[in-house]
Length: 208
Length: 336
Image (cartoon, rainbow over all chains, first blue to last red; front, side, top):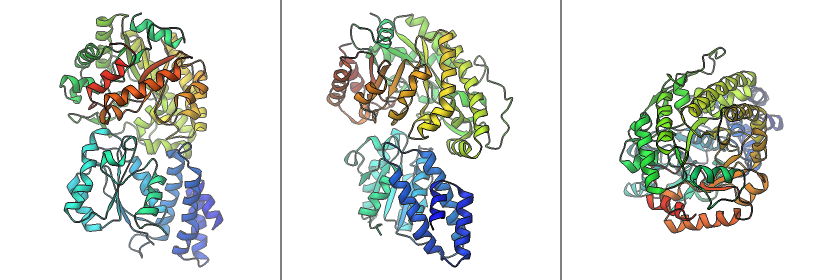
C-alpha cells in the first residue's frame, strides 16, 4: 500500500491509479485499499497541513488523485464504498463560490464519509429537504461571503422544526471562520477542512 | 498634515501628526448611500459620489475606486452576473483550460468592460480631493487575474499539469494589470492597490509564490513606480507570514496584513516596510465599537516604537458593516 499512499500524497493521479489497479489485480479488495491506502494517505496529509502551512493546491492535488482512485475502486453502479456516515456539504443561496466546499468533499470522501453535495447557491428549503431525505450525521456549510450569515444562523433551528436536531451543523470558509459557533448558531466553526474532519470523528459519530 | 502627507510619511517610517487610518470601505459606501451594489460597481460617477459621502461621514485618510475583483477578467472576456446587492460573480470564464492564450490582445482601459467607469471614478475623486486625501485605485496581482480568467481550480491544476502554459498566462495577466494600473495613475489615482488574494499561502505554497508570482509582482511594481505611483501597496489576505520576507524584493512599501498574522510577526518580517492592518473584517459586522477600539489600541501599541503603520482592517470591511464600528476605528487614532 505504501506506493499508493505516496502517490496520493504527491497528488500524482496517474501513479495512484496504476498502484490501485495493481493492488486490485493482486487480489486486494477495494475496501482494503481504502482502509489501508487512502485513509492513511489522508491522515498523513492532515498531519502535514497545519494551520500555518495549509494550502489549497496540495489538498486539491491529493483530492483529485483520491477521487479518481475511488472511481476506479467503486465505479458508478457498483457496491457502495465503506462509510462512517453521510455528510451534506453546501454553499448557501447567494454564495456561488464552491472551492472550499469541494475541498471538504475531497477530504471527507478520502476519509470514508459518504458526501452528498447540495451544490452552491443552495436555498435553505432545498438543504432541509435533502437533510430529511439523506439523514446525514452533519451538514457542513462553506461560506466565502458575509451576507449569507443570516441564513447560516437559521439552519439549526429549521432542522429542529423538522425533528432533525441530532444533525450537527458545521461552518467554515473565509468569511464564516472569522466568527464563532454561538454567533453563527452552529455546533462548530472549522478553520480548515481537516479541522472539520477532526470534529466529525470526535463528535458526530463518525469516528473509527 | 493632510492625509496624503500623513500616509506617505508613514510609508517612509517618518513621524506623523497621528497614525493614518484607512478603512477598507468599498461596497459599504454603496450600502451607506442606499445604492444597489450592482449600480455602484458599474457606474463610475455613482461610485465616486458614494465614496465622497462615506469620506465625509467617517473622515479617514483614503478613498477607493475599487469595484470588485472581476473588472480585468470581464475586460478580457468573462461574462458576469450582477446580483442587486452583491458583488458580481463570473458566469463564464474568459478562457478555457485548453484554450490558446498566446497573442491575446491586452484590453484597452479606455474601452474595455467597466475599466473606463473605474477611470472616471478616479478622475472624479482626484478632482474633488486633490492632494488632500489619498485616492486609491485597484489592480489584481497576476496570479489572481489568472485564476479569474480560468477559474481557481483550473488555474491551480494548470500550475502542476503544465507550468509553462501557466507562466505564459501569468505573463499575459501581468501585461493586463500593468496597462490598467498605468491608466489609473493617469486618470488621477495616487496609487493602485494590488489585490492578490489567490497568491495567499492559504491557496498556494510559498515556493509557488516565490517562483511564479514574485518576479511578476516585481515587474508590476516597477512599472507603477515608474508611472508615478505614490507607493507600492500589496494586499494579500490570509496567513501571509511565510511570504512577507519577499515583499521588499517585490518592491512593496505598503504591506497589508490580515488578522491571522500577529503585529509582532509582521514587524519582524517587514522591519523597514510600512504595514497596514489587521482588524478582523467580520468584527465590523458582528462586533461592537468597544471591540474595535480594543483591537485598534493593541495594534497602535505594537507599532508605536517603530512607526510605519496605517491602522486598517485585515481585508475589506463588508458592505453590511455597522457604521458605528467604522467610526470607532477612525476615533481610535484621534482623527475625528
